[in-house]
Each structure stands twice: as C-alpha cells, then as structure tokens.
Length: 188
Image (cartoon, rainbow, N blue to C red; front, top):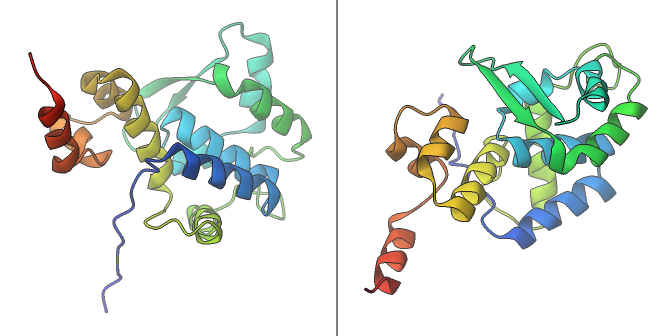
C-alpha cells in the first residue's frame, strides 16, 4: 500500500496568510502561531524550526541585528536567520515557554513532531477552506513571496539551498501561467 502524497503549495494570497495567522492564534495556541510565523518569514524547514531551543531565541535579546546562526539539519550548512521583523512576537512567546524546546510537546520534554506540526497546519487550513497545505507550505510561502517582492531567483535559490534556479521556481510554485502573464504584459 502506497501513501498518497499531496503536492503542497505556497500561500500565494496574502489574505490566506492572515487567515492562517488569525486561526492559529485564536483557535490553536501561541506556539502554533509562532511556529507558522517563523516558517513563513525565514524559509526554514519544519525540522529546523522544531529543533530551535528557547535559549537560542532568548539570546537574541543581546544581539543588535537579531540574527541567529543555525546549522541546517538536511544540508549541514550554516545559515544566518533574521528575526528582526518578527522579533517582538517571537521573543514574547519565548519568554513564556517553560521548556528547553521552543515548540514543546504537551509534556515539555521534547519538541512537537513534524507530524503534529502538519496536523496543526492542516486543521488551520481546513478552518479557512485552503487547499494543498502542509509543513512545506511555510517554506514555499517564504520563497514565493520573497521572489515576488525581489524577482531575484538567485537569492531565493541561495536562501533555500537549491542547486539550480529551475528547482527554486518549481518549488515555490512559479507556474507557466504566471510566466506567460508576465510575458503578455511586457512591452518595450
């Protein structure tokens, strides 16, 4: 028996992002909201988000630039993450966490699992009638909106640690239709 694997997508509509944030904050927990906030604003893989320790975030209080250097779990490469734009939400949450893990399970002795993170996101998406959501949605949303804002595929590729621009464009959901729309409206 093979498992069905849904092709998750980025949240392309900023209203959907706001709906997810509101739902996670109001119908779930602050933990779930901050997990999503970090995911869509840093492009970290869910496994790297869940590996964050409370102390790492609290130590940002002493850093002027609010950057954290982590070693990515999959690539083993160091990556500098900026928390500057989400600092207040993240630090206020971290101050209330009574666990070494930033996103603790109910027992607090370990982080929530990637499966639990998936369930949280799927339920919030269900509340808002949003399809094709999974844990990679956070990372893809980051890449998609960064690309839309900058049109710099090389920078997005580098931040996501992809090997080539085509992989990045496919990963963040830049479709042929969107490329055709750009070409249709471009004139010299």
